[in-house]
Image 1 (cartoon, rainbow, N blue to C red):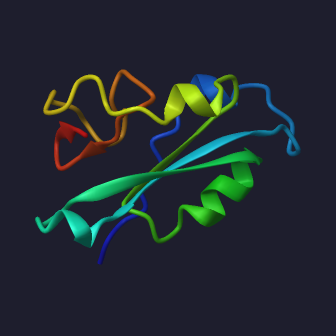
Image 2 (cartoon, rainbow, N blue to C red; image 1 turned 60 degrees about the horizontal axis):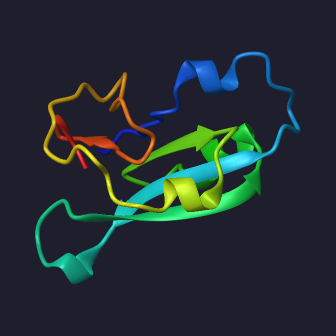
Length: 103
């Protein structure tokens, strides 16, 4: 069974209210890449942290950011292949930690 991978930086949710809008970034399976474990990034703006958790339930990984623009989070991961730990994620918000590597 797959576990939910909430990779939101705790600093992003410190002191927010239940209706604070932000951006949800979701890593979803991408069969068009024709390799096992391939993902693509989906970005949703103007959602709350709780909505992000709900929408991310069946995703490979997800995170919520409060203070970034959509243009900032739509690029590729600048550190692909860098080692990481899923619970703490990658240093950059454009990346997800999947199977021990930033993607």
